[in-house]
Length: 90
Image (cartoon, rainbow, N blue to C red; front, side, top):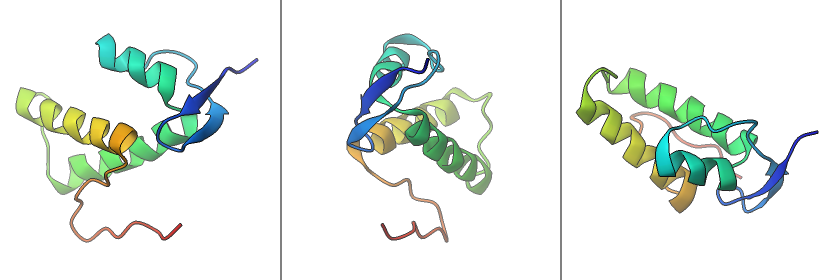
């Protein structure tokens, strides 16, 4: 049986993640407040950011940049700045 959470990104009840996907306190916050649907949206944006900005995930600055973008997207509703990408209209 899947668990439900009130997703802060989507502002609705939705299926929660099956397990904590990110470490630490931020990971717990994501697990408790973000749905599978919102996490899947973030993963698409994350892939675009890594590719567009040619991020090397071995570098701490690249990981910090992505974490900042992730928090802004999931909890503040801010779209990441991806060159040439226009988000679909709701």
